[in-house]
Length: 83
Length: 429
Ligand SMILES: Cc1cc2nc3c(=O)[nH]c(=O)nc-3n(C[C@H](O)[C@H](O)[C@H](O)COP(=O)(O)OP(=O)(O)OC[C@H]3O[C@@H](n4cnc5c(N)ncnc54)[C@H](O)[C@@H]3O)c2cc1C
Ligand code: FES
View 1 (cartoon, rainbow over the protein chains, first blue to last red):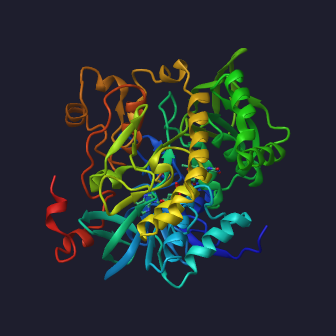
View 2: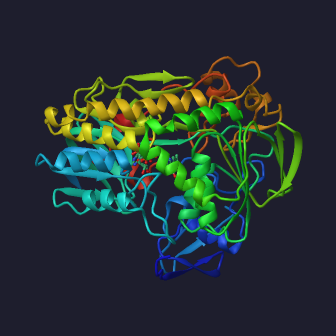
């Protein structure tokens, strides 16, 4: 294991600490929050983990439709799900 | 921003890194872009909790710290023109002009539909590996790995290293095929070492051949996986199902540039000559985008492309025997892990095929080409632009994807609106 520093961000206003370099997807999963609903209302969560499927879309620092798996966390980041 | 590079490389995996390094060795000024935040591609993806293997550290460090390499992370191609790429990163859009372009865009997983595959808790096999390396919590979680190919072993090892309880690896190929594949590995010592290492890390994890996941069950999240193996059907409770049926090349950018493709089974790959040069003189391609061959062929093809793109064909020539040897591995992979007929019959009429627009398999009945199916059902018109459903439908033998139109991925409106930056011609239908 490396010595890893941790980052605090907020998902749906809940604080969460994750290792530096982690993705927003990891932070959301750490809190056990669901990601999004599909056009017909089904729950969805990350599928590909590499930016292809767009199942992990959330709002990040005010910008909608961001892929959580492609976005590294930073201190004080604000994420909201279910949009 | 507007920059010129002698050699511009798209993709910082093993192929792109090798290309960048080879090109700089002849004095070329190199731009290296990747959509990801860190270099390494798929196999050397940055792991937030564990140190990278030494080959990865050397390859990444060697390319990124070179004074003639500009490393542009989180940078995505949004459009192309002859001799230039239009890219954006989280801050701005730019135009990058090039003397030669090397496409090292790698591969993604082949994800095939089956009942329950849209449930949260179901990911790709390499998909779960990627998520875990980015900090996805797996400690104490029960993970079942399934699908096909050697990537399942790598995904299982990563999951285990991140604290998961790996319930088993369920390979669809039969035991005979897998045994023959393993028996042929001595021809590729690096692969044999990799395989032995993985076996060591996976001591105690069951590896079952001839097994197919029939369904994923759960209400709003995965609870149970139903498997069909040589000894019948069983249901296994678990928290994550990581399932992938192999890899397919990311050819969208090559296609947009007009590179010639050839089909390997149902999926296109970029066609090149022995210099990794495509039908377009200034455009080279290397690694998985030219056909699935794994890390070693990606490295040697990347180096050939980098040398050739910098005008040094003799250096590229010296690598030809290694290239042929590494590529032969691809052939072994393909024949041994051919998909079983059962896999193609898993989706039922109400299984969703297009996850972006929630289009079921039966909605597609009666359409014979992509265009009419798309217009009528919206299949493939969602955010992923048909990357998941298009590949799945092609593999299932339904119509395959048509030509790609820019932008490659949804570009930010601010970038599109900036017409000085963005050639208007490229945003037309
Ligand atoms: C999810 C996954 C996990 C894998 N895990 C392993 C493993 O553990 N072990 C193993 O031996 N093999 C693994 N592989 C196989 C892998 O394909 C090869 O080992 C190797 O990484 C291929 O090297 P490459 O350079 O050709 O492509 P890649 O390593 O895939 O690199 C391609 C890079 O290009 C970038 N890219 C693609 N398109 C664009 C674009 N338009 N704009 C900007 N950037 C772009 C991608 O972000 C990526 O970083 C995995 C493959 C996948 C898909
Ligand atoms: S999980 Fe597929 S795009 Fe993020």
